[in-house]
Image (tube, rainbow, N blue to C red):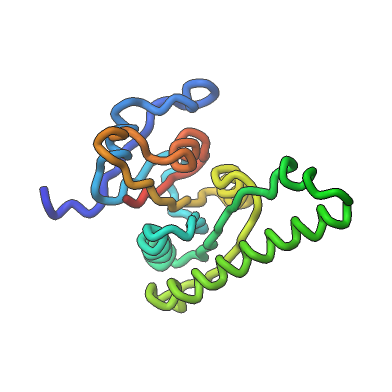
Length: 193
């Protein structure tokens, strides 16, 4: 079936510990599928917002395009979110004073904001983004947690993320952020290869 454009799966497990377990079939599909995979979870209503998680890597353009396509299709706002590692205490504690720690943190935040703005300036025009209500955010923290928090105030909310490229040796690897989101997100997801 070379004309398949989307695959829909429903992961096993309903709540609690069961929800943290991603079935081997779902994991294999997510890791190997060459088309976007819709992970059906939660209410079957149309999403009220689309949260697009981008990591500024080369595959991020495909994720952005897919997320904005879904937002346009559903006529809802898209939030493009980039999460980065919070300047960890191990780095900050190496700086002597509180003022130096604060300056260091602000430097990292500024660098990440600048990188994200440059990435958006390069990639958003290619997507036809003006046809959709759009916001962009750059936030410190673990990407999966930042994306879950970005969806907390809207139900249902679609999360769109990418999958890391894999090698034959790691044929079941989908990336730690995507893996965690598939297990923890309350609503539907679109995973873009």
